[in-house]
Amino acid sequence: VSDNTKELLYIEDGRYYINIGYKLKFYNTKKKYGSFTNKIKKDVDCILDFFKNIIGENNIKDYDYFMKCLKAYCLGMKIDIAMVLRGIKRIGKSTIALIIEGILGGDCCEHDNGSLLLTKFNERMRGKAIIFFDEIQTANNNERIMIDGKIKTLITENTITFENKNVKADSTTHKTNFIFISNYDHTIDPSDDRYFLVDLSIKYRRNYELFDKLHKLCKDEGVMHCLYCYIVEKINITTFRPQQDLPKTKNKQDANIRCLEKEYTFLKEKYIKRN
Figure 1 (tube, one colour):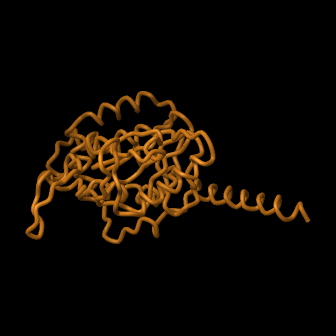
Figure 2 (tube, one colour; figure 1 turned 90 degrees about the horizontal axis):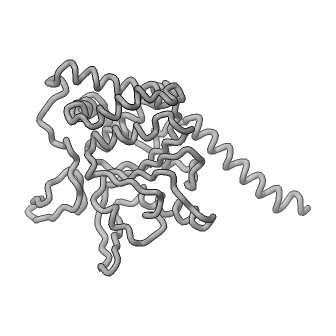
């Protein structure tokens, strides 16, 4: 079993299980948000203000959806969408990833450039709560098609087959979620409803003073613990349906338009011009 919310060994319905999932850092915490000091809460407010201003370009609906995704991650839930953080350089994409990693715990997270999607040897994915795909590298169109197909399956399916060299492959349930980070258009099909293409503001571009401050807060266990408690206690996901509630972000609408343009170009070249 791969579950980021359970201990290494546990009993359920009278059966013994060995859990290969890395446990979420603050899961099942006894602390409450109200028990933290005002100084720590002020630091958490700084992070939340950063989220509010950069996510959705200050669009409250996009921010709410983003925070609901974070709560699902904090509770070890697998959701049927992947988050895509795409935008120009130095606006804070990596800082968002660092904060998420700080909330969940480094052991629960893995960073990859897409190599895990181009090979059958995917053992590094085992037991992870989040896989961050940073600037996926592909050599040709066949690799792009392979990556797009494989990631869609991983987002949708609840089981995964793990394989390593000279080791027998095995299948198990998984609750891994996926986040893409890039300065460029992705190899994935961005128009698909399994992708949350976040609109990112350029408000903080090259604001290295703020980024340095946020990076330090990511290393402060008290601040990350408080932020975790805030998300779990304050964000309501009772009726959250990730795919159905997917925001119509500007990035998403632009992606849909580009897909239509490609289809139109294909039809024009194949049928209209020939006739």
